[in-house]
Image (cartoon, rainbow, N blue to C red; front, side, top):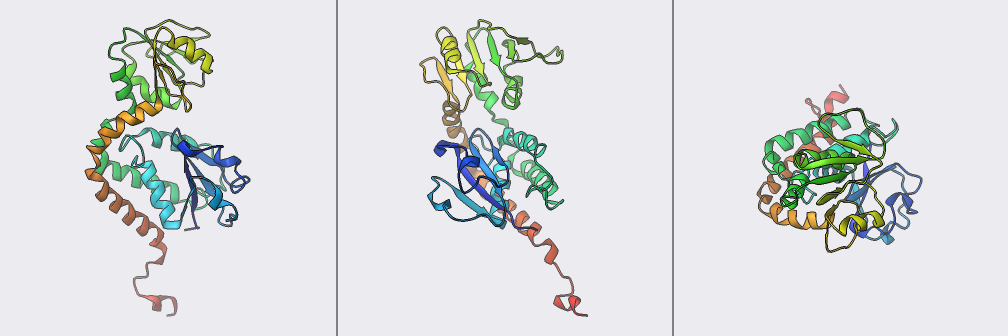
Length: 278
């Protein structure tokens, strides 16, 4: 396999997007989630300045493959085994060019997909029952009616958990008719609670929070007594995660073994080195 190098940094320490920093600018695209940024970089990336980038981790070859598998399995997420990150990665794959490091070897993406599926089935099926949507629904238990703002990747993941109380889903442009989702455009419905899964301005969120509970799932949430944030959600989930971490060691071992087998698959010589010289 061609050498794989990943640069990773948590968004909690990001002062600027990873792609804008001098050591990374001009290299391969950056995959960004609500928690982290991962840059898939060229093998000849200059090391100059990398040490000065706050919070930056460099993962290479087998370490890079294992780290990426752990992220995709939800082992690095506040919700152990959560599936949202896998959906975000699929969306990212649909946008990358053919010369992207993940595309240079045709077997790599299928390997990632199959290994993550197997690991989730073997070790994480029960843990995945915890999700962002489940926590959001619990926060909304006393709300009479709910308005959701935005219906992208995160909004659609949460939707099944809040649909019973949601009277409107506010979007920027009208979607195809859907009997299950009450889309509205250009409106600001009143409700006892609002779920923000779209890049609304702080002024609008503050307006909604004056008279309603607001669950603000933007990266930089508004600080307000009536607002619950993405960080609040992560904090609540951390306690739940501790109860399920007994599966982590065996899952880590499984992923390491799979990564090692994948990287060494071309080096298997059933007749020893003599088969090259016979």
